[in-house]
Length: 209
Image (cartoon, rainbow, N blue to C red; front, top):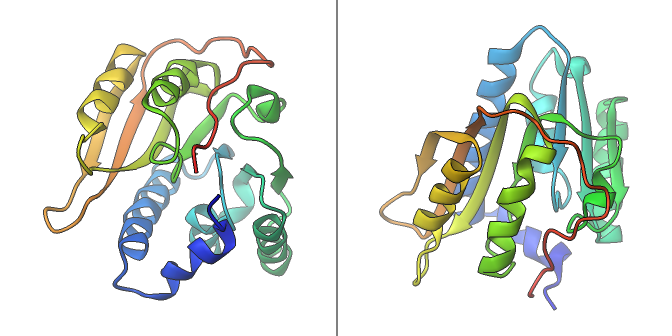
């Protein structure tokens, strides 16, 4: 299985695909925070790693205190890193759960969320599980919520189907970033349908590596 702590080392190279992807994700998180200011907002991050998708953005903002967030991560070392970052930054409304994000049970009490981060998820699970997870997002999203997701575009490229699945389940695409000189992509979708009640015992996905 993948060493997810070592996997993060690519972020130390500003030219790596992970760093490039991270910059785009953080740009959209920052934009969303600006658009939703000054009200309180909730964030749910799946397979959050050390939390940098969100935490580094909050570090740069003076209004970070209005953000309540739940980060889901199974690797204890990455959880510890995220907790250290949160404590260092004084983000008292951000929680890290060492839990299996592939089950809706881990989301109890954290939904519906105004922002759902699905970064580093869709490229590590089966196509069937990607579809199943997208179909369950109406149970995780508040009305008007934003979902930010990532996926590689290696053959066979699943991103056209992913974008279609979002459309099928009540989402409108706001952005899709897919650079010609890379294989990564970032999608941004707005939830425009009615939220659904959470099934707390639903299996969404299992990591395949």
